[in-house]
Image (cartoon, rainbow, N blue to C red; front, top):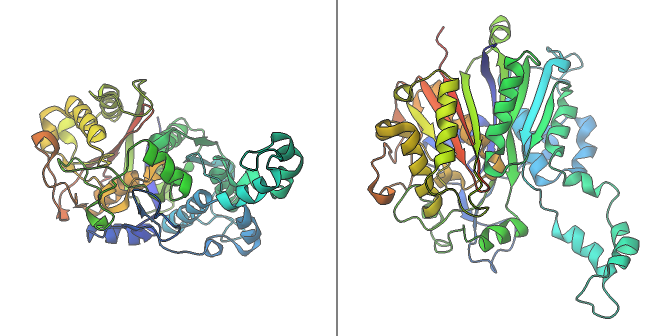
Length: 436
């Protein structure tokens, strides 16, 4: 198996656009959760979200591609912004920046995790008004919808909302023609996409890959779904900085958000030959699945523990060698309790020593955009700093956890990112510092 390293990081999150902005804000304890600004949420019990700062999508694509931005949903835009940041960080020159790239596009893969993209309601409702039933104006006549309603939508309407369009646009913009795939497995999507890209390069099917995920749930349907599932904190509308409390006894729910995190993976020897900046080596990956319930995780975290244990085995790394973990840590009591059970099974007594950085207190729940978690684990390893665990003041059920509300300097050699999602999808990644 060939060795795989990270040579580029791209992030767009509620606390910053660009990996540097995100990292600086994370260490400073900046909270990106606030009252919703992009839509009227007064009718919702939870009126908070982690919204990405304002940007212009045209600034992140070549001039020749700006027309295509008209058929980009918010999720696609987030992936495009993160990809642009990752490429510029890596020193790789794609077709987006020059006529002659400095890599073979046929050997460059793309694996991006995505969610089920929510259609913009104003587009749908404008079309639906033409399909009202003559007998009952509050009902849709499917025959009229097929004959008249659908014709009100732009011919390319569907292309805005297919999950695979994130990877589609990224590969077109940067002319990547290697193995490509889209994974839609809720919060685990990003970690699974990174793991698949990792295996592709290990096996020699590609030399490079951009991978991770992006998603936005900052919309009416995203809020409604999370509200019906009773996952959102409905008691902190006037105190957003306290809304998400990962692994905390006083946690009352999570807050939805948006963002994207993409890594550029590269075969080690190739990276060395071009003098690339190497953040870390990806040394282990594993995934698992349980079928407990679609709306709640497996209480004992058994399947989640299996993903972590197998990832460490894949990395040939002992539990005692792990210095830092960026967990799911959503701030949902039943979810966090199950996650802690799984961590205790996989890591044993060493869980008390491993530094935990549950960053959702600052970003909100980014779902398929949890590639930001993986990117954070890599940045922590590279910079030798442990991001704070804001709002984890009184650990759930008296658990003994290695957390701090402030940033810490540390000698880090191994970090992990793990995800524990509804629907039973779990995954874990192991990163190791590369010593010259």
